[in-house]
Structures are given as C-alpha cells and as structure tokens.
Length: 274
Image 1 (cartoon, one colour):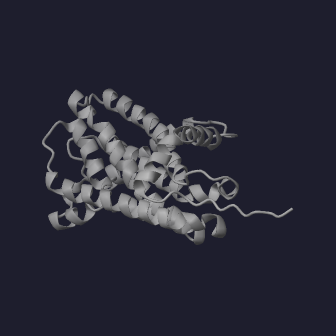
Image 2: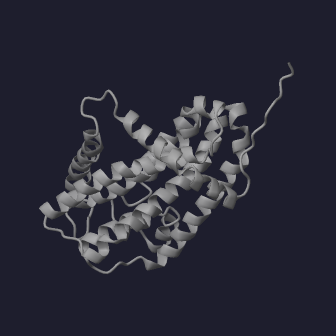
Image 3: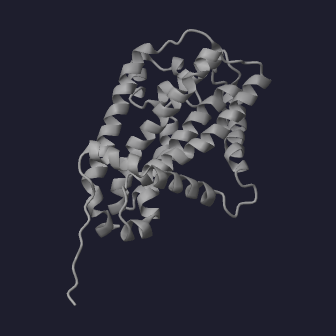
C-alpha cells in the first residue's frame, strides 16, 4: 500500500490569519484555561503568589528607593507610586516571558497537530491578564487605604493601558518566540533583558526627573507612558506628557506589525527546527 505524504501549510495573509483565529476562539479559551491550571499546580500558596510577588517588591522598593535613596514620587506616597509601576510592569514582563517561550514549551502539540500557531503566544499573553486583574485589585485596595481615590473617568483608562501593555508584549513576544524556536539563547537572555529594561522605564522613579530629550527616547517603549498614565489616575492633576503619546503609539504599531510579519514568515519551519 502506497503511503501519501500530506502537507499542511499555515494560512497566508493577515486577514486570513485573523479569520482563522476567530474560528479557533474555542481552542484559544482551552489554551488559556490550561495554562492557568498548570501555572500554580503543586504550589503551597497557589494563586496567592500573584499578589505576594508585587507586594514584597513594593516593600523592598519603598525601603531602598523611597526611604534610603529618597527618590521623589510626586504627589503619591512611594508605596503606591511603586505598586502602580509594578502592576503594569509585571503584566508586561510576564506576558513577554510566556509568549516568547510559548512555541517551544508546546513542542509536542506543534509537531503533531495543525492549528493556528498564533494562538500559543496570544493565549500566553491573555492568560497574564488574569494575574493583572489580581494585582490591580491589590493596587486599588492600597489606594483606598491611603485615601487616594481615582476619578471614575480616569478608571476607564485602565483597560486602554492594559491593552497597550499586552499589545507591546505581544509584538515583542512574537518576535522572540520566532527566534527562540531556532535559537534557545533567547530564554537565557530574556530575563536579563527584562531586568535591565525595568530601569529604562519609570517603575522606580518618575519621568519628571528625566530630561526632555531622553523622555522622547524612553517613550519608544510604550510602557513608559502606560506607567505614567497609571500614576496620573491617582493624582488627578494635569497629564504632562501628551507629546510622548504619538511616539509610543507609533512604536506599538511597529512592534505588532514586525512581530506578526516575522511570526507568519517563520511559522512554516517551526515543526522542522523546534
């Protein structure tokens, strides 16, 4: 009996890929739910780690950067100032870490079954949004405790900031996941890159202490504007960095376009080199 080789190629074109993703939305839900169940399996504290990590980081940052280094925090107490930065930064760093590794850790499925590969990094990023919700709850509790109440209209900005954050992480995650399939150095370089990057966005310091020229450079990473806008929600003052928004939005679009282009260009060889 003659054996026939059946070749299944990935869908070409952005619009076709988008339609394929919509048709596979149930599979996307399955991957998100599976990742959430696996993430804290066999841990004693389970999902409490999502809250404890930023909480301990906030305490350490407050002692070293707020009390000892006397880094200014504007109109906010340093505890709230640092937790706002950590809440959005953790969403970004967790999303990009999981997205970049999403193809490799699902090697067994990728080799055996065809499905839109884009689902893997997208599910990794969306799964991080659950952790973000818990971190955001912690942030709001602390803000109310310290009597810093965000205006209702500014709270509506939170989903926008969250979407910009996961959009940035997805764009970079698509690029890194494509490279990681062939070069596993990515998983060793990425943690170092994330650590260094945290100091290049205003997580522990305000953007106001940076000179205008360097602010424009920092705005290339949309997280700089996201974190500053997050703090603005609790101060109620005037947002001072409207001139940086076009730079961040343009950078976000470029990251997404480059990420999708590179991912679609390389996904056909994933099963051969993974």
